[in-house]
Image (spheres, rainbow, N blue to C red):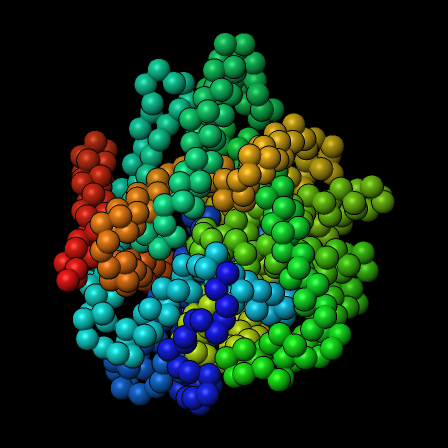
Length: 618
């Protein structure tokens, strides 16, 4: 295993470079508001958010180095660290809190803001306890694709020249593709085809340049495991349910009369997500068991007040004080127990502390493999709400009060897990560029506090304008949570589906394969895994042909950034009602022509990633 001393950061530990300055903080806060608000809408609209780390790094670099011509690489790092916090808090909130609206309970602005505040604090302080093990000791095993890409972008911007140009070339291509696609709506955002002779079997691809770029960043092995999980769900399980339902003529779900009423996507929503949640739970438990040495090291550090990341460490290994971390964690849990706005009581607060610490460790490791954009935070939410609901129902805490309490607990844990995944990427960036971890951690807390105050207002405004759960704001990632809670408290939970997922996860572990990436593939639509896998294949070919991987990394990082930035711009245009002004191409092409065009364009995207390495090869 590579030791930390073998990794030479861009800024040496003995060199003091400005980090936290008014310039970096103000830039970060401006970008935080932009990314956080836009992602809140995007998550409610399409059930996903875009990771802000890479686009924030590009934008902060463009502002500080390009426009103002000021700022050090570490100031840029602080700006993107603050900015990405808004997206992380927004993701945690929109993947959980909207379930309260679907339970006919309207949360107050205060409750939503407090959920975001204490969830964010728990996410930051708990992750810091794992920083040295995950970021430093497992440097070779956990690549943190977005964090590594951010470091590449910041270094390229600092040095200028060809590398920086390549970042922006990729960014221009990704931005242009996404704007013509989602802005002008000239071609669809994905393709799908039914598999002949296989009832219910479909295969497809989400046509986003960012997914191809992420695949290149994470490589062939992990992307292949994810695709395998997706194929199991969409080419095996969904067709099996379709065939059995058709042959026996039975209704497999209470809401429909026949299996034909569901279709592949209906089966995925009503069955596969439960199976995936079971597999994710198993994968998370195994990952936590494997990370137990981290817990032991953290407890030793807390008890001694020194050691890994303590006050005696060198600048690039210095974390926040263990005593302060312990106090912040305990105060947050206590606040959840005593503040009247939280309807969870002492038991609920203890569950927040337990699941918060557990899923922070899991989330921090997951994103090291698949990146923050594919972090299955909603799966962790389901697991938390699942166990909390069962416990509350067992002790007689039932009715709407019990359901609301379970969702609130899950929401706090969700925010914690989302923020932990984000700060993990940021700390990886800092590790590579030579930042001071303590400064980044303080700025993460600042960013979390700022957007926590905004989150309640943003969610309330969106609900008043569109109504959460309506066709305009369907919140697809949250609907399964409401169904789960209602199922547990009414006694209609699909235990069989969850146990199937558990069996799938255990089977993977018995074969010596990590079940978590496979479970992620099962849980997510296969359409997402396909372009990621193709990106991983391109990375594999580049490595086999001994080409320069770094140039492809820069180009792919820029492509991810360009795609993500335009995705956020489109979300803002949609929120303000201006999207119809540019969407003149909607319906201009027929379905067949549109699918053919987007297939050809994605082929060009994949080719451009490969050629970015070929052109630079010496």
